[in-house]
Structures are given as structure tokens and as C-alpha cells.
Amino acid sequence: MAVAKHVAEAHEDGIWTCAWTKQGHIVTGSVDECCSVWDANTLEQKKTFKKNLLGVVSVVSNSDGKTIATSSIDSVLRFWNPLSESSEPVGFIDAGPVEAWTLSFHPDDKTVISGTQKGTVNVWDVESCQKTQSFKGSSGEGVDAFVMSVAYSPDGAQIATGGLNGAINVWDAKSGDKAAEFEGHELPVRSISWSPDGQVLLSACDDSTVQAYDVARPGKPFETFYAHRSWALGVAFSPDNRHFATCSSDRTVKIWDLNMKTCVAEMMGHQDQVWEVAYSPDGGELCSCADDGAVQVYSIAAAQAAAAEAEKKDAGEKEAAAAPA
Figure 1 (cartoon, one colour):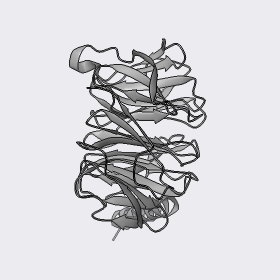
Figure 2 (cartoon, one colour):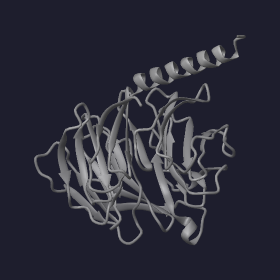
Figure 3 (tube, helix red, strand yellow):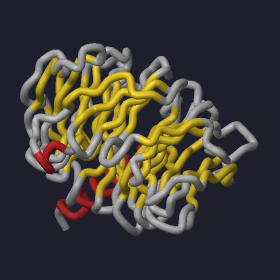
């Protein structure tokens, strides 16, 4: 429903991560150990990076789309230039065992952070490929310390983390000190996303909910979205600061209106669990990737129009059924 573009076999295995760049590219990372670059308009494959090992778990783009960072299960961060003719990495960081999982670029593009399986947040200098800072990024211990999701705030002053134990914390990016703690989950937090204005934080969790938090008021969420029938695996704020997208192991992708607190569109094109969603820079389109090896691109306007038409049709049928014979 409302799928504008589709590549059925984009990778030879499940696709766990995707990003949309300012250069008009969609970048995907797969368990097949490859990172692929696609033309966002045509979904023509432009380039494939094959130096990753054991599967790509996180891919992020810097602000101008000229540098891509990947993290793979071998705990190596690699930097790539999607505009170059070369398919070799322009830099790499051997982070060490359990020292790199999910990634996030600082807004100034000079550093990238990695959440780790052992519960730390590592800060890496992009130019030198050296670690400049490391701090405890989880309230959990042992296996529960795993930092599954990280995200710099839009101004780069804070870092949000989501943990295997359901904890959500915000940290001062300079000192590494905890700035705020948020409640609401007890299962793994797979994804977190800041609103473009930095005032709201969204979390996607294995409890199938998405929580919305007021960053200025730590504690409980101001809204709970019972988003999916199974694990909520990904969440992404729209550039419009009002809508957000979610994806799930129930194979659906949904678009939500934060102000109206309602789902405004649902897409069901994938055949397996959907790992991540990413908005285009202008917010007009959305891409998703899944374990079925497919990449889907949706027109936001078309998706919302289709949902509105379906709702109108359903209301008409109910009215007709209720009318006296």
C-alpha cells in the first residue's frame, strides 16, 4: 500500500539498517556484509561497499551526505565516500570486541559515537579515527548494560541512549555526565529519535510501544503509542517536527501525527520484520528496510491520502449498514 518504489532483492540477506543522505542517496547495510548506495529517485544501485565483516548493523550519513559511517558485527567502524569512484573505505577504526554497535554523527560531522555491548558510549574523531572520549552510557549491568541505540541531539550538546534493559538516558556530550533519565520501558529499546527542535525524544521498544518524552521534563512519557502488534524496531522523526515513522517485526511501517496522537498511514509491503525507517531530507518520502532483503520507498502524501480514503470508505460502509432498511 502506497509503495512508490521497491527493490525486492536489494541484498542477499536481511537488511538491518538504512539512511537517507543529502546527496540524494539511500544507503543500506545488510547481514550479507555489504553496504549499498542507491539513487533515491530511481533506486538504481550506484555502489556497493564489501569490506565489512559479519554483517552491517548500523549505517549513518554525515550532514552533507559525503561521508557514510558503518558499524559491523566485527566491531569495526568504516568510513566511506559515496561520491568517490573507489569502493574502498576512506578510514576505519578497529574498535575492539563489543566496542561498537549503533552509530550517530555529531551535527558538526567531526565526531561519531558508538553505543556498545558492554554499556559504554565511545566518541571517535572522524579525521584521525581515534577515540577521544568514553563514558558509561547505561544503567544496566552485565548483559543488560548493552547500549542498543544512540543519538546526538540536533545541537550536539547531548547524547540519548536506549538500553537492552529498557533504560533511556540523556548525557552531556562534553562531560559524559547523566543529564536526564526517562521511564516507561522494561524491554530492549531498539531505536531512539530526537525531534528536529530537540524538545521531544521518541523511543521504540520490544514491548511494541513508542514512548514520547519531553526532554525538559525527565521521568515518564507524556504519551504512549501502542504502535504495533509485535516489537517496535525503529522510529524516526520527520523533518516537519510533527510526524514520525515506526517499523516493526509485525512487518508494517506506520506514520504518526504527534500532535493528534494518531496513526495517519500504514504500509504493509514487506514480507518479514522491518528493521529501520529513514525520512528523505525534505520529509516528502520515507524508506524502509527489512529481513526480506527489500528496500521500500513511500510517498508520504500518497500514503496519507490512501489512509484517508480508506477511512472515508470504511465510515461510509458503517453508515450504510446502520441505515434503516
